[in-house]
Image 1 (spheres, rainbow, N blue to C red):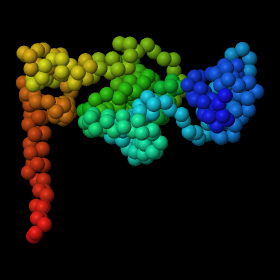
Image 2 (cartoon, rainbow, N blue to C red; image 1 turned 90 degrees about the vertical axis):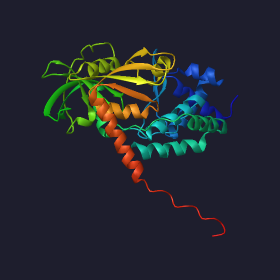
Image 3 (cartoon, rainbow, N blue to C red; image 1 turned 135 degrees about the vertical axis):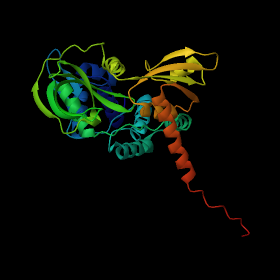
Length: 330
């Protein structure tokens, strides 16, 4: 039989692993009586864990939400997943999350077992992500949009489109998508009577929450597929043809799903046909791939790549060289 402290940790782990447990199930898993389970539940409550109890056929114990976040128990894979997620959050596109992510990562790193720290260090030293260069958004704004989607509440907000035109929008929010280093709100636009996607960074004021609505069926099945279809169908668009110094199989893994049509040009080269609405953004993205390429067309993307290259060349020329090292005898 487990000692009391070890049994409490085991009980907490069970409650975190499943939505609901009956007293009999917990007693069997812990090899104790149901009376002992009740006493242990009271001890967890005294430590700040909000354990709810319900009677009846569908009753049982479940871990609820409390006024503050109590300590969590994570298995090896969960702890590693959280650590990796925090590393990405520290370089993400949500304003103000970098410092909080680094603090949380430092706390988690102090208690990780040696075997997990080694796995995390190996992953960090082997896999490098390109810094995200998308527009920053406010985390409170994201939380408000998510809540409106979940509660099915109409939103009214000001919006500035890609042409710089301001408008007032009244929408039925469906969900949020993070894609191409940008946050998008997918919603039914009541004035236009059609589905629309809105860049969250282009919402110009705090959305006002209105009455509820009945959800509609989203075209194309899911949020990611609809967003991809919406972005590709907008006009005007540039049809870029990019030749990469890599085979089709390699570029299929490097490019986002569904973003390009690939044609083999031999065993070590391929041609990608990519639609874009922003040649400058495409030029920056191509540079982040760390892959040799040639822009065949259109001229707008060729010019965007040229301007980006000239900007980097000027930055390289203006870089201050480090002072020469002095020898020990000087």
